[in-house]
Length: 120
Image (cartoon, rainbow, N blue to C red; front, side, top):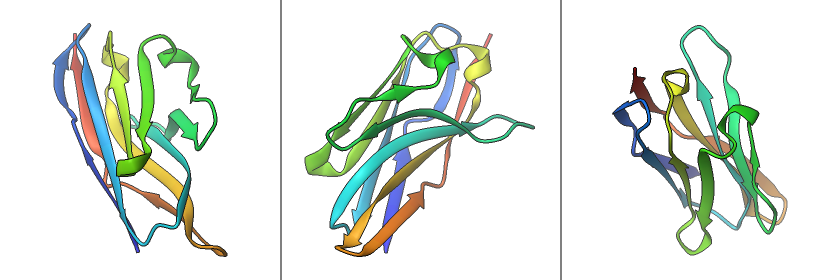
């Protein structure tokens, strides 16, 4: 089993910053990709940012220049630094990690979600 624990959500005023963290633990052989998604009320879940192992980060257009995704591979942790937050960034943010438990045993797991609320 692989588990994800997220932290860092909360209430912030527009223009403020928050940093989300997600730690992966359990039976992990390798991690291929780590990312953040979000789901606003009444909307579908959407990609925010992803960072593959050994690759470059990709961002949803509306967060480019404001959000930064990073990883600490030694700690199996992914971060999302969110600056210049806007009310439209309000959503539940989910961590997603894909990798392998063994050579041929893949996993793709989601965190429980952390609520980010941006007030105007």
